[in-house]
Image (cartoon, rainbow, N blue to C red; front, top):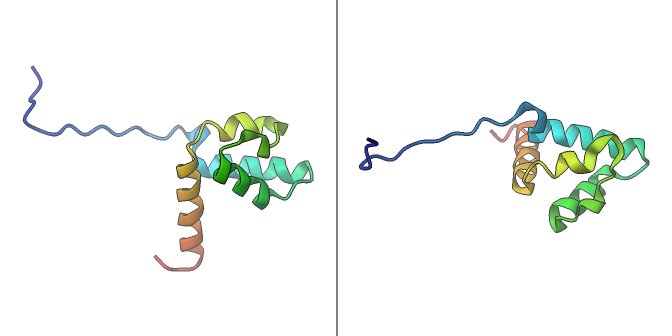
Length: 87
């Protein structure tokens, strides 16, 4: 029987196929290939949640929808902080 007096920890490992970093890289590349401004399109998606900001080229649209938008923002901010040596 489980010990109900203690807090249990559960950690889900991020699937390497859907890690935010890999998704952003793939989506960025697909947007560039189709001639879109990837920064504007990704920001539009993150702000609105509307997947039509992302091209379906290379499966980018379905791929980006596998990652929560807050995880995308977290990845972008983490990389920005690292690149500016704030950490």
